[in-house]
Structure formats: C-alpha cells, structure tokens
Image 1: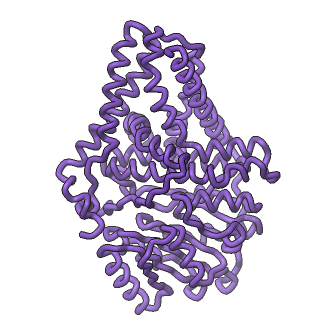
Image 2 (image 1 turned 180 degrees about the vertical axis):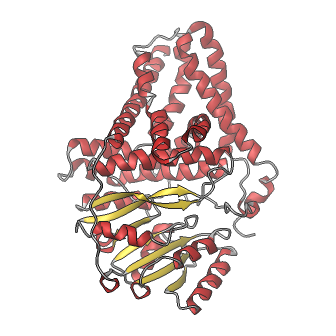
Image 3 (image 1 turned 90 degrees about the vertical axis):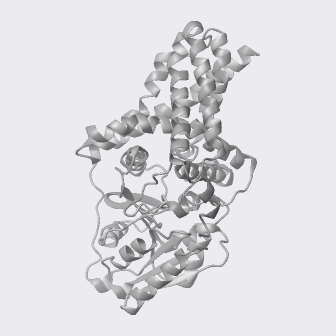
Length: 484
C-alpha cells in the first residue's frame, strides 16, 4: 500500500512539473520581442461604430456610483454610445444605481437602468438580456469594481479595424488599491503576472486566449455567432471565448490599455473568487473539452495549450493529493523515481513570471517583489477551496454564482459585506498540522522532502491564520451582508 501511494505521489508531482515547464515556455514567449500590432483609425466621429457598454451589478453598494460615473465619462460620440446598468441587486445598491442613472440621464447622458427580479443565468443571463434590449455593433463590459479610463473605447476599437475576424479585444487590468494590505500586494503581483506573461504569450503565439470577464470589447456578431452568453457555467467569459474560437473567431490583447480595478482585501473573499473561477473552468472543460479535441481548426499544440489554460487550477488539487501522499513517501525514506533537480527547475516558472511582470510594468519592482512570498504561500492555501470546486465541477454538482464582494478602495466601508471564517480555514489549519508533522518526520527519514513539506505547512498555515485574523468580529455579520 505504501508503495502504491508513493507512485500516486510521483505521478502527481510529475503532472505538476508539466504545468511548471509550460509556465516557463509562456514566460519565454512573452519576453521574446515582437512588433506591435497595427491599428487603423475609423476616421471622423460619424464613421465610428455604435457601442453598447454593459455594467452588470449585484449588490455593489460601495462601488456602483464610481463605476457609473466612469462609464458616463467615456470619451465617445454620444449618438454612437449607449450605457446599460444591468442590476440584479437585492440590497440598497439598486436604489443607488437607479438614482445615479437618473441623474446622468437628466443631464443628457446615453444611459439606461435595467433591473431583473430573478438572477436567471447570473451575470451571463444579465448580459444576454441587455443585448436583446439594445443595439450596438460592439459590446464593452465592465464589472462593478472597475474604473474605465475616458479613452478606453478610442484605444481599443481601432484594433478591430485591421481584422474582420477579430471578435474580442481584451485590455490589461490595473489596480486601484495594491498597497491596501499584504494580500492586495500579493494579488497585484499575481494579476500582473497573468496579464504581462500569459495573455501576451497567448495573444502573440496564436494560442487560444479568453475574455477575462471585464475590461474587454466584443464584436456583437461574434457573440451571436458563437451562441451568445450562456449561464450554464460559473465562468461565462471563458465559455463564450472558447465557443468563439471554435466558431473561427480570433482574439487580441491590448497590453498598453490599462483599466484599474479593486483588489479584494479579504482572504475569505479572494478564496471564494478563485474557487468560482476554478469550478467554472472545469465546467467549461466538461462542456467544450471534446469539441476542442476534435476541432479541425487548431493544431495539436494549440489544443494542448488550450487545455493547459482551462485546467490551470488543477495543480491545486494535485497539491492536496501530493501532501496527503507525502507521508507514505517519507515512511519509505523518500523512495521514488523522481529527480528532484528537474522538479526544482519546473518550479522556477512562477517566480520568473512574477519577476518578469514586475520588471515589465513597475519601476519600483524590487519593493513590490517583497510581497511575492505572501503570494506563494496564499497560492498553496487556495488549494483547499479550489480542490472542492474542481471536484464539484467534475461530478456535475451545481452551485450558485457567489460574487466577490467589493469594499471600495477609497472608503473601506466593508461592514455590510464582511465575511466570517469559512469551513476551509479549519481544513487549512488541519493540513498545516499534517504537513508540519510529515516535515518533522522527514528530517530524519527523507531529508530531501523537508523543503516541500515545510512549504505546505507554511502555505496552509499562513492562509488559515490570515483568515482567522481578518475575520475577527465579523462572523455575526456574514448572514446579513446581502440584506443590510
């Protein structure tokens, strides 16, 4: 039995290493210099296309007015623009949004308010309903925590005019509150790594990429041709993106167009966000995986990269599995056929991604990189909630779309949406103890496993302690956050 478990451990680590080596490939692809994508101007204002800007909301009282004001400030011909506030809110956000829309409407702004009593299809359902009610050759989408710059449309739309089969232009996410606390500093590095490495590499390399849910512009005919917004997964953005690829559409990433957004300062909220993305991505695999495999549109390498992307949260499940099977390996005195030096090389992918992104984006990158250890440890701690999410998706279990609460980086009025300690925090604490015990045993029986088990102990322990620390005094408010 111990030998069987040790082989499970070995296979698990090998799969994790494959993801690590793929990250190294993406870093190299992103770092390779390329000529900028050409753009074309549509000419005078009367030649610009019509644009529908959609702002999907659900209980966002602290950021809704900021979002609406930013959308109204977009520099675009008013007769070519319509802004839709798509509000499914059940709390005071609805009144705030309705009042703000009425204010701008009376001042001649092209903005409307749409409220749904039922959240059918969640965000995807709201976007689809909004499209049915309004025209627009192009569709721009911004989540509640984003603040689009005034020149957003004038900088993204010209990218479309050089390629009639370009269905999406995705902008880079910037950050409103990266210095709010240690967690937001860590998240800023994570998102910088994604947008400065993964998105650049996939866009440049002709690989399948996707709309990230906000700060992007769609060609309306692309959405329609791909089957429209659908609400049968928790990641409607990834689902539509891959259906658009399968229908023959291409996508581009506008790295030089940055849209700031709020980073969640709460570890409990961050875990919920990541678990939703993890579950949704595996729901998309179940839905579209076979179509991707059998599609004649893509090369074998493009299909492989597509699966690497869709299954990007799989290493979290593998982390839990490798930790649970590490004790038998220690008891066998480290017996397994792996060469640890090769695995160490694979592990360079994540720190190199972080370092390259900070070098590329930030003048103060040495100071920002000080938060990388926290990102690394939280990345381990996320494995608990993401493992559950992946297993639920693979088993076909349906769960409600749970939004990531926004607290407003300017007011910090987090009370109404504050979250208490969740079940995962206790599991993280338990796994930290298991990893620590395994690490202490490995000091004598399998010293080469000490670094790995120690990192697991630190990662799960750090995430659990952070959860307990941030949740002090808010447990009793959690059940009231939607109706207060």
